[in-house]
Image (cartoon, rainbow, N blue to C red; front, side):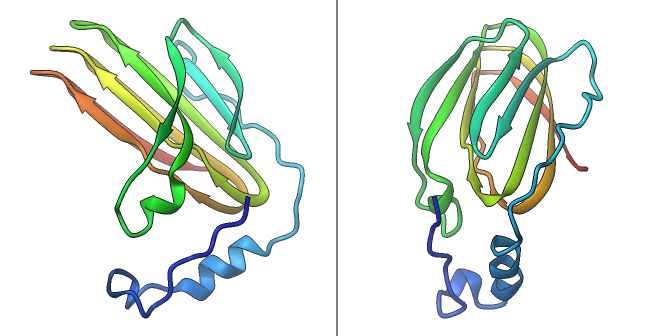
Length: 151
């Protein structure tokens, strides 16, 4: 799905390099390989072109519509996924987003129960534009460590 990008006429994007994003969107479609996981013991979710293509581990995932009023995040709104982690749990998740040259949005909502701990690594690979909105709902004392990787 192709979305209209904001312009530099919008205050939040006044100094943004919007032509670079437009150029990324026009890259030719290409087959992109899914990179190997870097966290071998982690639950893993692989999104290809914004759709959940592979899941390992015992995560509870449900589909959910995700919205945002943020200037760029509103473009990533849409069909997403909710991941719910139990109270006092310690979880490691690796999310891999593979883009084959189209707009790719895959907004997850991750809910952590009270005192839950999450280590999250998000990997991005491929061509095109990946716009990601990740929302965290944290219970009392819950903690998230998040790292991003571009392959």
